[in-house]
Picture 1: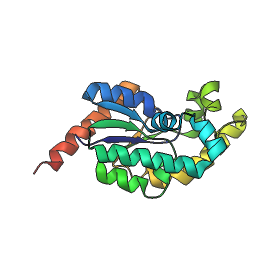
Picture 2 (picture 1 turned 90 degrees about the horizontal axis):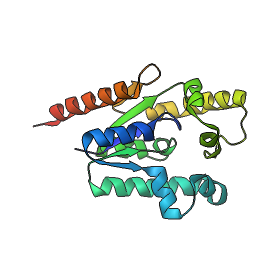
Picture 3 (picture 1 turned 60 degrees about the vertical axis):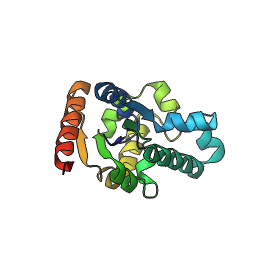
Picture 4 (picture 1 turned 180 degrees about the horizontal axis):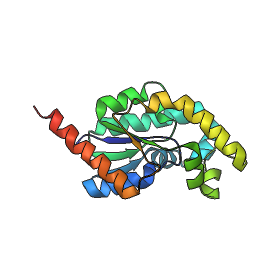
Length: 180
């Protein structure tokens, strides 16, 4: 199996669904944000604050390159901005399967706990009304990148189990098409 890259906006469920998919597939789960934090010995928020977004995106790219170079079967939860930087989306599409987990700004905002909002540097300090407005604009700018994924799953009306089954079906169908 090729790597499976989950893309989508922060808080859309990439890590939660990624863990479930990895268990079902019997492969490793990789969270690019966690790998950056491990490498830097600092939280994503601190890397953003003290080293800047460009440095964070460079670290993310390094993690992505290592995941791809390993050639290991895995489920990879990407940071929300990773697909937007440089040619990251193109690299993921070339190296494996990509799935866009799509939710509306209101759905994502409803999923975020106060801690979840606080740990995301770009959401800090936003009030409830500002949050949805910010997310709506930000998601619109990222949509062209996310939409390059091989599969888009509208997650709003689905349970986690339904989303997992849809992705597993996509993977089975993709493997059949790729066989010589």
